[in-house]
Picture 1 (tube, one colour):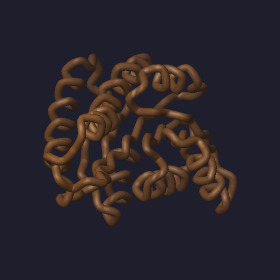
Picture 2 (picture 1 turned 45 degrees about the vertical axis):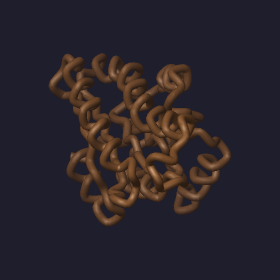
Picture 3 (picture 1 turned 90 degrees about the horizontal axis):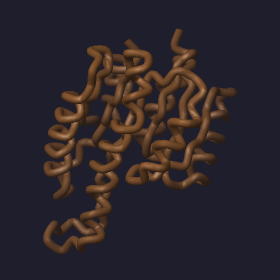
Picture 4 (picture 1 turned 90 degrees about the vertical axis):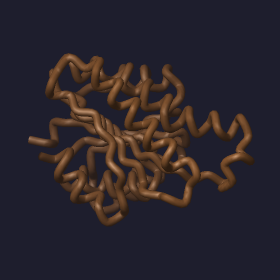
Length: 192
């Protein structure tokens, strides 16, 4: 039964994150809304609970901070079924060569370093149970100059991480999504 499983939604305070949460809650899953702004996540938790009491927790998580991943891992008190990363590429400056070092580093840290750290810290929990899912949903956005770069880098990073996994029932993948495809993707890849 799905209610015994926990799913972490990283970067939950997005339109995609809310749709993912809605699908998981409809299946009576326990979810952890994770992200860098606790007040925003708490407001999201309150909004999700307006339709009835659900099993929801909130976790402060900056994706590029290993200590945040470790704290999240240490706080889990039920079987972790999966992590769903929401990747958004909302860059204020659309001109690639006008990007500062700080802006570029922030994008790389959020999108790639967070992917690496989550796999490093969380994968051992999956290996204990010999099963788990790390799903990376990247919002289809061809207008961002970073879109192609991040999707290709994310794909390469995930392939490298998969080589380190020692169990066939631990799945790591990324999928490009639109707002209309989220429910179908969740049903196909998560709630089998």
